[in-house]
Image (cartoon, rainbow, N blue to C red; front, side, top):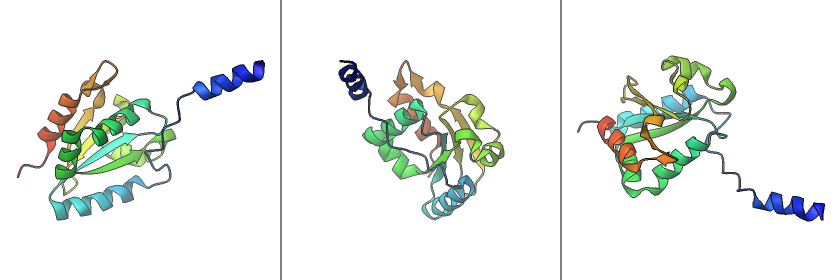
Length: 148
């Protein structure tokens, strides 16, 4: 009987989400590559600092992929880089941009194609109760998209 109860508890667990962040990647190299692409495409760079264990990081990523207006704005205006900051990984990058993770995870930093930091966004301000508000996220992206 105990075995069936244990099996039932294991089966009731939600599946673990697929990793979003490359826990071995050099943030500096990721950003260098993104800036080169941004210069060619005249887009800004959106750095999303987070970790694979971060539930809110997964929620924001899912919204960005599944909401058609948000996905289109990201594709049109930004080169997106997911920077892993689990257990101080890429701490030098976090420090380079003024310690944005002090706001918690995820946190967003927007760069222009030359690498100039334009804005740091505490994503808690884009939330509405238990989710990110699509209207707030889209308004943020439109505000920090390159002016064409």
